[in-house]
Image (cartoon, rainbow, N blue to C red; front, top):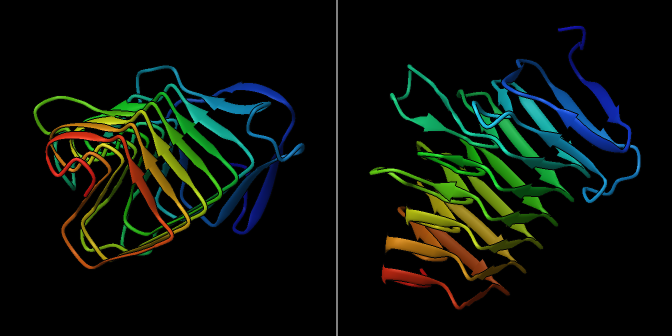
Length: 212
C-alpha cells in the first residue's frame, strides 16, 4: 500500500514469501541482480502470488508456488496461479522472468487480459480440474497477447497446456515443448487470430491438436 503510481520496487536476492498481494496502480517489480534464478516471489499455495488490476511490470524475478484466487466478477473458478491481471485497463508485462510451479483452474501460471511476455520461461504450471484452461498462460476476454523470445515447457491443462489465447496473439521466436493437454491444444489453444513467426512447437501431447 505504500507504493505510489509508477513506482519501481527493487528486490534483493533470495526468496520472498508473497501471497495475494494486490497491485492496483502502475508498478514495476524488478530484481537487483536481474536474475530470476536468485530472486523469487514464492506463494503459500493458497492464493495467487500477485493480483493486479493496474499496470504491472515484472522484470528479472521468478514467481512460483501460487494456487490462484477467485474473481467473483468473472467466475467462481480460481484463476492466475502465479499472477492474476484483470480489468479493462489492466496490463501485465513480464520480462526476463521465470513463472513456474503454479496452479489454478484458469491460467495456472498467468491469467491476464493484456499480456506482454518477453525472454521468459513458463514451466511446470498446471490448469487443473474440470475446467483446466491455459496451463502456462490464459489470456481472456478478447485481450491481446504479445510473446517474444520465451519458452513454454512441462505445463499441463485440459485445454491449452502451454497457452490459451482467447484474443489475438502474436508469438515470435518462442518454443512450446513437452506441454500436455488432456483434451486439446498441447502447445497452444487459440480462439482468435494467431500469428506465429520463428516458433518451435515440438513434443507436446493432447487428445486433439497436440501442437496447436
